[in-house]
Length: 220
Image (cartoon, rainbow, N blue to C red; front, top):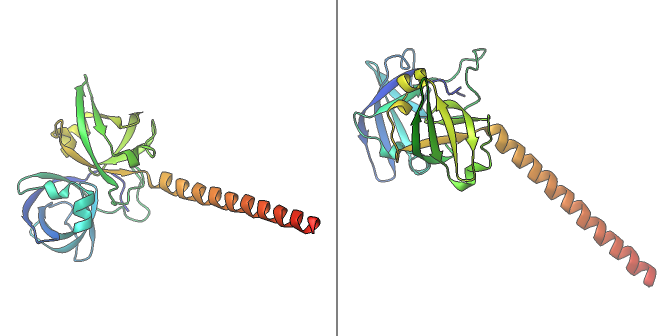
């Protein structure tokens, strides 16, 4: 579990691309402290499992599904990446609950600089926009952000100077892809309400069938 508070701006050292997966070697001296094989590190918001680590670098395998769902496949040696270790039990939840399970990719469509901030507009896949609400939380490339405006096809976020300076969002431009993870609580609520509606519909249908059977019995 992560919080969306980026700890370190790391760098892609090398990318190996087998037919249906990839292996990434990344530099991150801070996040690799005390890390061992099997631990997790979020890379641009994607939870990856550490294969090995040495000299401030770590390697991680990325499966085909991850490459399909995220923008990791577009990374190349020299690219900067947002890195975060999992939250320690009992630690402060500085951002919001982030699983590191990317729901899809968005595209930066506009950047509007302000005096002390920058407004960024991001186009999102249609299947995700229903989970994005004004003043709600969303994870963009692993960064926990508050939604400023939520539209039918896109949303905006406001980036403070620290976010611009310490994450990849400060250098990404219009047209660049970003990894999106919507608030998992919204997905759970939708799932539960869907089951309730289905159960209610089933009960109503059963009631109608019962009434029809009773009426048929009376006629006989």
